[in-house]
Amino acid sequence: MSNEKIPYKIYLEESELPKQWYNVRADMKKKPAPLLNPGTGKPVTAEELEHVFCKELVKQELDETNAYIDIPEEILSFYKMYRPSPLVRAYCLEKALGTPAKIYYKFEGNNTSGSHKLNSAIAQAYYAKQQGLKGVTTETGAGQWGTALSMACSYFGLDCQVYMVKVSYEQKPFRREVMRTYGASVTPSPSNTTEVGRKILAEFPDTNGSLGCAISEAVEAATSQEGYRYVLGSVLSQVLIHQTVIGLESKIAMDKYGIKPDMIIGCAGGGSNLGGLVSPFIGEMLRGEANYQVIAVEPASCPSLTRGKYAYDFCDTGKVCPLAKMYTLGSGFMPSPNHAGGLRYHGMSSILSELYDQGLIEARSVEQTSVFEAAEKFARVEGILPAPESSHAIRVAIDEALRCKETGEEKTILFGLTGTGYFDMYAYGAYNDGKMSDYIPTDEEIAKSLSSLPEIK
Image (cartoon, rainbow, N blue to C red; front, top):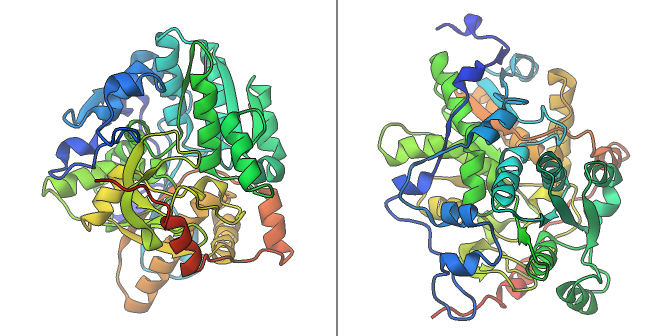
């Protein structure tokens, strides 16, 4: 089908909404390394994980054999309020860049949470409700996950307790108020409300916090209250499974119009949106059916893939969670207070780490001033103010499109526009006022953080 016939926005019919999530581990010959019990050094059991997570989510977390998992009807019904989401041809951006490249983006910001996070939040809240729990606890970085979970918990009548990274709590007060509007309690992390929070504050009294800190507090809160479990917005395999609705819809829409992407680009923090977007395409690569260039884009201030070490590490700063083998900067790494709060995690999903180690994914790091330059260029021609996290993918998509302009190649680029930036005006203000700086950790800082990695025999 000719490009002229491809609409600006490709909307799928409601009947075309995927009825199953995709589990890429089923197609991986070499599986991600198992989570380990930090006390015994042995793979964690379902029973051990069920003290922290919901039973059905534990089942999904440990499932490496089933390629497809049915989406419950109640979750599908909720999805239909905002899904399928549009696949957009960025004609205006192409024209502004003067590139022969064809640029598409999957837009996930068309819900109140403003991001892709709702895809997993509603699933995790559903399973918590089915288990008869009173509520859940969680962490949030920039606030998208906390917002999404508060919406999902409100829908199912669950209590929602959110530990929000301190710097984001202060920078993004409107995110905090959306969560409270939906009934969630929001605590800046690290806090003095938990034992691990008090310990972190004693060691780092002036800290801006980190996702690792907030995770530790949320886990402690869940395990110390009857009828509560902890839920996570990224990193874990269960979350990547739920987010595959993004990639599945993208693939259905592209197949409908005979489009095949040459490269697929996503921002990378813990891995949920990137994994969700690329997993169905990676599955084709693993089965020998197709080949794609997959690019993970991370902030230069928190470069787990590009400068981290592939090793077992704690998933949290307080060292209360299981050990995961991942590309990590060390669980004690305290990233600078950059404005892409959702990408300030010290490690990367075990699935994506293994795929990266196998060479199926490449990674790039970018500085935040160049990210916001790309964000404003995109906003001015495409009419959407992108989230700082999403803008990392925009930066590399623009770079690749300009490279096509130089070489004359007509590549097709797909990137994930994971959310909107309307709650991020503090960050845009800092950029517009020329007050935004770029911080890149030194080799010495990273080496110091990595020196505390646990020893695994």
